[in-house]
Length: 265
Image 1 (cartoon, rainbow, N blue to C red):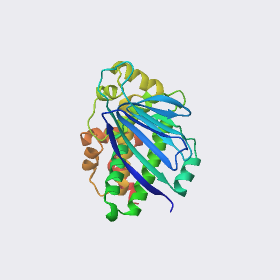
Image 2: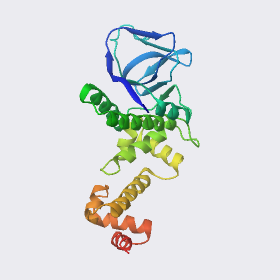
Image 3: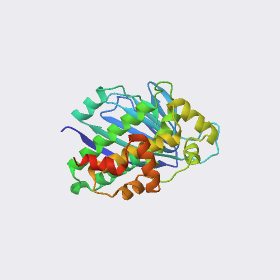
Image 4: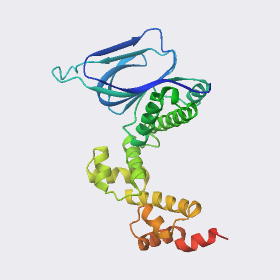
């Protein structure tokens, strides 16, 4: 079998919990902390794990997990939630070996990634009615998304994770109306600081980047859909066709209607 999902689920601990695998894990294990705190074995030592931290282990890795009261908050209630899965197979082994995989990375909580994880859990719960082919595709998609998210946490060309999170938020919300305040709030920065950092990291403003994402989506729709230009304008987040017309012409030198006519020839 190219890839096999052994088990997956969501766990939430409100009492002390401890698990240790002294002999090393028999399969791959991925775990994403979604709520609260815990401690986990990372490269030979226990590390504090908080919401948004992704743990990835390969077969043979030592694994230890502790859920208990925090030393600085001894009277606080225990609360630790996470998504987890165990898997194995030739595809997973090849995927793992093609690029370095950090044992622990802070990827945040992305709705699309969590949705893939939930779909896998639901498919696994179907038991005899589960579709192995669908499970395999979902698991592959999740692995690739985890790999992308983990790689984005590494500083690239001087851009830390905060910049990546702002870009990711804009890409996810470019087709709807959003404010710069929303982006700043998403990464826990003031508006002025978020604006300054984004321009510093990427050489353009948030609005300019949002327009690039919208224009790319609009061009794809012109190529591959029968939507009217007004529908494309609305679905890509431009708000009005005149505004879409002006922005598109500034970028491509011709109007949207001329662009679409050229596609027909």
